[in-house]
Amino acid sequence: MKDYEVKCIRCGARFPKDDIVYTCRNCGGLLDIKYDYSKLDLERIVKAKGEGVWKYRALLPFGDEIKPIAINEGNTPLYRCDRLAQAIGIADLWVKHEGLNPSGSFKDRGMTVGVTKGVDLGVKGVACASTGNTSASLAIFAAKARLPCYVLLPMGKVALGKVAQAIMHGAKVFSLKGNFDDALRVVRLLCEEESIYLLNSVNPYRLEGQKTIAFEVAEKLGWAVPDRVILPVGNAGNISAIFKGFSELKTLGIINAIPRMTGIQAAGAKPIVNAFKENKEEITPEDNPETIASAIRIGNPVNAAKALHAMRSSGGVAESVTDEEITEAQLLLARLEGIGVEPASAASIAGLKKLVEMGEIERDERTVCVTTGHLLKDPERVIQICEPPIEVEADVEVLRKMVRRGR
Ligand code: F0G
Image (cartoon, rainbow, N blue to C red; front, side, top):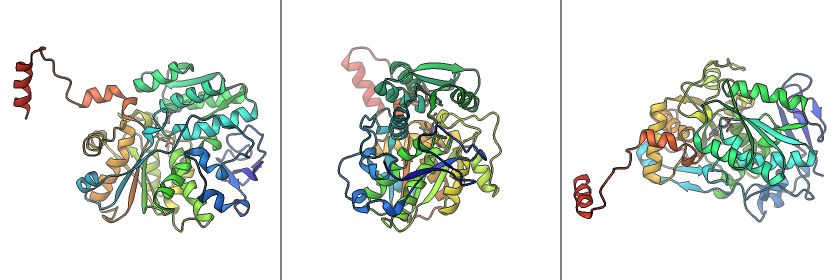
């Protein structure tokens, strides 16, 4: 078994590897998985063969004996986006399209690790609260692991594609009368009392899987780092995980800098942006978060402390974008680069555009935007913002006229 410990980021308390614990029992702080980096084999990390999350097994909290619950997660493309870069006015832009994971979002990276840990712990079931993607992903991995899966979705607030996935893969789906923050509060209590394993991003094993986004970006760039990484922020797990990934590579001497971690929230749900700008250590939760980017409609992000640390210590920034800016970016990315993403993901592009216009991002910074979820997750939004299909008779002359008129 690999040497690591589960440690509170606030008070430093340590917990055994086989303890089912999500936050510190002493002080309530967030937990982190800490390795003994001096014992890790650098060659094994840099020269690892294979693809995806488990390729980086040397930096995951498992020994070689563990058989992962896996469905080819990770190994997503890093596209160079020159047309979009030109439209925004920067020189060197890349998009890491996490929407091309098996379930259509980055959550699969966290779930393969989290559910594998759950199986190892011998849990009787798994559960999460979700704005949609977490539930879709957990349902798949639970099905693979043959574990009962319980998901709590805020009623009427989850995009259609995501609900479809969760029910199709056999999760027990509850439509909760409340918002995401209410759902998370309730599911945390449920998981305290039952032997059901909580797989929201407060579970530190989830973030271990998600940190592999950083490893893939660095490796694709020849074990180098971009100047900046931009991503949407909801419950704030992913930005914390990616920062951790880069930090580990730096600790190991594989890279020599950490990108400026830049988090984007929607204007109607931006407690982290507020805390960042007001120089506060703690967020003030928002009671009624609202945005068309339903994936990040979150008022009380559980990983705020980790995310604020990631942005501040890397010289990054937090910014918010309006729903109109998100929609504009979603269309731009789809039509200039052929990359289809859901609204929350487009927040990263909208944030980049805004920060370039503000002069906060230099035009020559090598920038990676992480697009977190696939376009088909939220088909209803597409119908709202695009021209609908045009009805036409089955007559080529009529069609020809219409095509000519449209040219
Ligand atoms: N983008 C997408 C598409 C998401 O689904 C989420 C989170 C985020 C960004 C934000 O990531 O929470 O790590 O800051 N979705 C969660 C869910 C909350 O339940 O699917 P984060």
